[in-house]
Image (cartoon, rainbow, N blue to C red; front, side, top):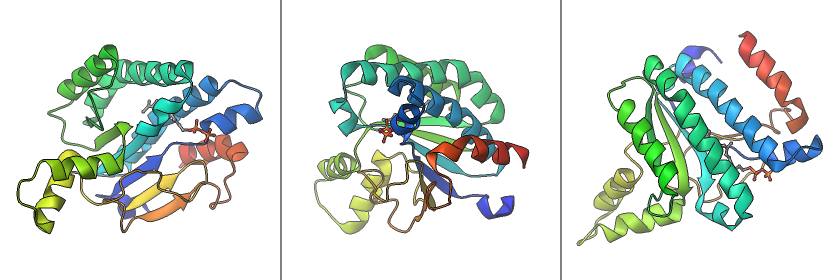
Length: 218
Ligand code: FPP
């Protein structure tokens, strides 16, 4: 696809398959998530160069609290490190960072880093990078109902977009692990999204590095 085809689109990625990718190589699950976090840097750079308007990444679902605590802590550690190390680079690229999802259950240090990165990039007017953390689409929809006293379809839709910070409908939804499920991610916004699976593209988890090379060489 030509880069003009991506211009102005809203893309979303369910970043799974990290654990399987690591296990196949005899590595820890943390190493898989670390490779996933490194891929985020490349994807954000590429997406903003392509003129994508919004990119939403599913980093931590509300269901992920059920994972072993060391794995949860590892993911939050990677998220904090990403925000701390990439904040200035995001700013230079004009990328505005927004986090969607529940904030009331996040560790204080993670919340602080999120608020700092959001404030530092608030004036940026290039791509909007939305990171879903402690995110459940069902919860977001239910929460939007809670904000209403009298309910109409239009008001519900408005509130759903307000809860999810206004980026609107998803055009392209990528699931890196190959499953064909939404897993409680952006149920409303992805109603008409084109679904793309790494595996369906013939890119198995073992061929991800070559995917990286071909993406970089374009
Ligand atoms: C799901 O794959 C992935 C996660 C629960 C964590 C994703 C988080 C990161 C990549 C790091 C932090 C994020 C950013 C934005 C820097 P999985 O572990 O379920 O994989 P599996 O399906 O193979 O088990």
